[in-house]
Length: 573
Ligand code: PRX
Image 1 (cartoon, rainbow, N blue to C red):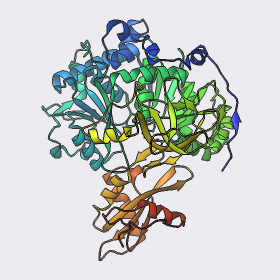
Image 2 (image 1 turned 135 degrees about the vertical axis):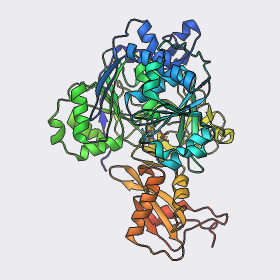
Image 3 (image 1 turned 180 degrees about the vertical axis):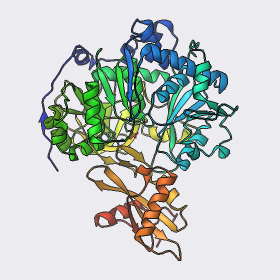
Image 4 (image 1 turned 30 degrees about the vertical axis):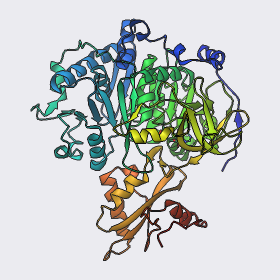
């Protein structure tokens, strides 16, 4: 592994000079003055993202450039105001959505996804985006936990929605070729034609729910992380400080809105700042990604280490074929950004890749390498103004520099989650150390105040930038007829960061074969999602368990790494 190295600070803009001035005495109240609700007292994030720019005379500016294999479209802010107004009407009149209802969106990344997303927020709903690769179990868990009233999806994905098991679901809006509307099913195309674009926006309170993202912990089912409308303060401000948004930027965030990066920084941050976004549908290919940058003249690019590593492994001759010179600023999030990748970015794009650290629960960026900072390759950067981060011990005491401990944030930033849906106990478990939010990451801070990621404290696995709870995978595995018990850990992978490895004991009468491994892999893939399926499986006679029956993943990790298994006093036998 490449050792850390330093890259000097580069471009500074008016925004970032401002940052330098405000750093020590910054208060989030200073970031509110740009919003219309600062004057009117009326809050709705969709209004601030879209309609406000039209009111300010920027209606003709392109908000969204969309392309996939068959479509190539542009939408101005005025177009999106019009279409999201229609979508809000559709949701209100036909799907009976009222303030606070959960509206889920489960579909590929197309303009309709964004239009419905905005429409739902305009109508005062709490929007729940679901990654299109989710399979039936993953969809069921999320829709039933949130008691979703409306689901927006496509006819192709409908087979993964167990409608009969979702009593709270009142309507499904179908985007695509459908047989028409029948009360339960609503034909999007037809309904949009009929809907009035002039929607009276539902004005919200600062603390009203806006978006619900499901994410995994180390125990239990995925949990719904709730963010409120005023989270937009931090989305907007970090868009300027960290992403360095300026008037003419063309911005490409490669994350799907099913994940928090794809909403906080795929939708909120750029549109709150009136910036043009690029959305590219379809699957990853290195050629396609370079082409997307060239064709759209992308200036700011926010992606993830796994994607950068895939591009890196496609070789340096490929990017040389494209004109990538429009790129001004490149950023990364989601997993450790290794110095090798930073070195590659410097060689291939002559750009410094800026790491950013945050989580679904934090709602927005917290610790970052902002453009005017020197980069120490391998470090996540420093806490933003208005954010107090520290390394604390298990009693909440701050630790001195260069000591590993829990990465924690002082409670109370604008985009902090406000609830775990229907689960106050889980929510409170994040805040057991005085005023600290405990992230679950371990890290240390160096003498210059840079934070260095060390790993997860719990068993959560980050694979290809997606967060997987081992419990969810284990629960699925034991549903397979051959599986008696299963334990899941993450193991290192040069591209994906981590991949999922399962240790499995089989039921009587089943033989440990390669064919069975494949079948079990497919079983999880078809039940949950491809990224949650174990790419490696080891069959074992027996799995190590505590006397209370919990699989000891610590021992599985030791097996994997050929390390001593440590204290086994709690082992079953
Ligand atoms: O372990 C950290 C890792 O991703 C976790 C949060 O995952 P999620 O909620 O899915 O959000 C990902 C994108 C916001 C963290 O607890 N993580 C996130 N960013 C970094 C990171 N690990 C290392 N370096 C980062 N920059």
